[in-house]
Length: 124
Image 1: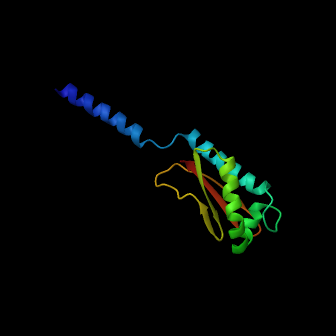
Image 2: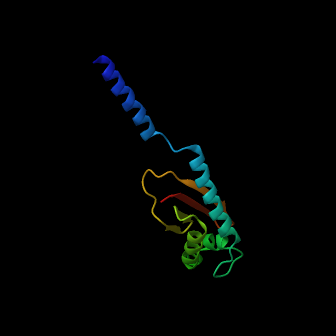
Image 3: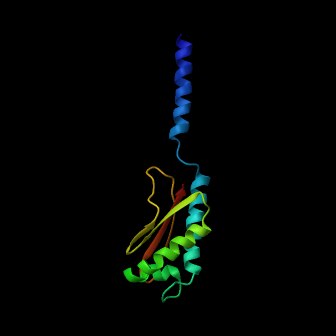
């Protein structure tokens, strides 16, 4: 009887450790790489309005950020894998998908003369 109880406790502790274990480091690294790729795309794309890149346009002003939101969202959705969701934060607001609680997130940021832009990605 004691051996059975010890066996049950052992099995439950192993199962709990797997359930509560943090995300694998390579998963976080992959997500960070996807976020960095998103920044690179925004840095390389020409904006709809004035400016050198979509990245600078998104951080230049609230008006420019509103103008660039839809094209930026569409572009990032087309270059990121279908299994990855994203949210972009600019000095003037955020756009993209709401992040689910407890999701493992990859993050990348870029700073322009006008402010900081941060991209967060996670597996949808």
